[in-house]
Structure formats: C-alpha cells, structure tokens
Amino acid sequence: MLGSPLNNTPGAPVRPRNHMRLLFDSRSENESFARVAVSAFMSQLSPTIDELNDVKTAVSEAVTNAIVHGYRDSFGEVEIESSLTQDGYVVIEVSDAGCGIADVEQAMTPFFTSQPDMERAGMGFAVMKTFMDDLLVESRLGEGTRVTMRKRISHAAGAE
Amino acid sequence: MLKHARQGNTITVKLDGELDQDSASRVRQELDDLISDARIKHLVLDMQGLTFMDSSGIGVVIGRYRTLATRGGGVAVRGESPHVQRIMKLSGLYSILEDAR
Ligand SMILES: Nc1ncnc2c1ncn2[C@@H]1O[C@H](COP(=O)(O)OP(=O)(O)OP(=O)(O)O)[C@@H](O)[C@H]1O
Ligand SMILES: [Mg+2]
Image (cartoon, rainbow over all chains, first blue to last red; front, top):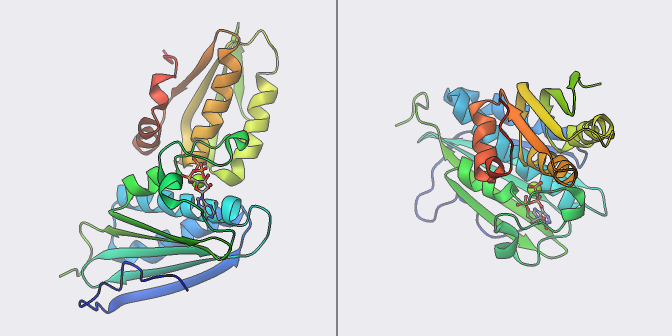
C-alpha cells in the first residue's frame, strides 16, 4: 500500500511491545467504538486522563474523516492499526480505501473543508496535529488515505 | 429530547454524553427545533454533562451561531471541560461566543 509509516523509522527497528489491528464498516456508529477500543488498548501504558482524551479525539477525527470524506459516495472498511512501543509511544494508523485526497497540504490547512454545506469546521487535521506529537498523512486519489499519528505517553509503565 | 429552559428571548439547552459526527445530526436537528421560534435570539449551551466532543461539535455551534446572528443574537457556552475548551480555543470559537453569565 502507501509509503512507510512513522513506527518503521529507518535504521532503528523498534519491536513494539504490543500491537493490534481493527477492521470495521464505514458507519458513523463505529466512531465511538473506535475511540473506546484504542483507549482501552493504550491503557496498558498508564496514560493520564488528558492523554487518553487527546488520543481519543485524534482517533475520532481520523475515523470520522475516513467515513465522511474517504467513503463519502461509497461504503467500505476502515482499518486501525496501533502499536505500543518499548519507549512509551502509542502509534496509530487509520486507513481507508476511499477516494483519496487530491491536495494533502490544502486539506491539512486549518479551516479548509470540502464540505462547508455539511457544517464542517475544517478543524479535524488541526485537532490531530495539536493533540498528538506527530502526524503523517499519505493519500492517493482513487486509492485511499492513511493517517499515522504518534504520541509519547509521559509515564508509560515500564518505558525505558 | 434535550433538556432545555426558556427565559424571554434566551433558551438554555443541556448537552449530554458524546458529541461526535454520529450524534451531531440529531443534536443539530433538536437545537434547530428549539430555536425555530424567531423570537429566540440567544442560545446558551450547558456543556456540563458533555463527556466528549470533537470538531463535529465546532460545526454544530457555528451553525447555530449563524442562525442567531441574523436575529441580532448569538450563542454562549458554559460548563465546558478543559478538554472541550482546548478544541474550542483551537478553532477560535470563543471570539464569536457571547458571555454566558
Ligand atoms: N480520509 C479522507 N479521505 C478523503 N478526503 C479526506 C480525508 N480526510 C480528510 N479529507 C479532506 O480533508 C479536508 C479537511 O479535513 P478536516 O478533518 O481537517 O476537516 P473537515 O473534516 O472538513 O471538518 P471537521 O473535521 O472540522 O468536521 C476534508 O474536508 C476532506 O476534503
Ligand atoms: Mg474532519
């Protein structure tokens, strides 16, 4: 599929301490499911309530985008892959096989939305960027989009 | 139905639970029904019971603001958690909100 995600830093292969993959239908009802699933998974790192809220919000934004933009005229599956690294990061990839983004830079500009008539604020990517440490968006028109996010959990249990 | 109370040209509405894209359409519809009376100028959103909100909530607030601004009124927010506050600050929402007190 698309390029290399953040957790495969060249030259520094870090074996994740844990890993999971979720696949679900592009239905809005699954937004809360995705938030809860990721937050339950990452609870192994003993995050603070604030850190949990940040990650839940970022996941919500990415999953919502996959559903309402990626599959706007269609229906498909959304995939979440998440790793907890030895050094205390939670890495989350949200992918869709939807329409893709023509201009990623424009899409990531705060307040840009392709659906102003749907009362969208154009703040999704800005929220992901603010609430996570790193954000990477890879997309191909007609093929899909993958959003990779990473956040260091301050007091990650057992982190080196 | 959302809990609400009306006082003159102001209506206060309690938001509960999670406000995401999934629940936004229902909340949007209920709020629009509650402010459909053109004499209502001010909407106060009581967010005390809101446990989660993402950018979909920003869209909901801005949409109701647009309606009420044309009547010379606006939207105020109160009881929002620090987390909701961060999202609203990020989007510059506080600059268009009325004072809730
Ligand atoms: N998975 C995706 N597939 C296709 N297009 C996308 C995807 N994610 C985002 N986009 C495009 O990027 C734009 C910006 O996304 P962003 O989440 O920042 O704002 P929004 O979804 O339009 O509004 P908001 O998130 O505030 O409700 C979208 O309007 C859409 O055009
Ligand atoms: Mg969005």
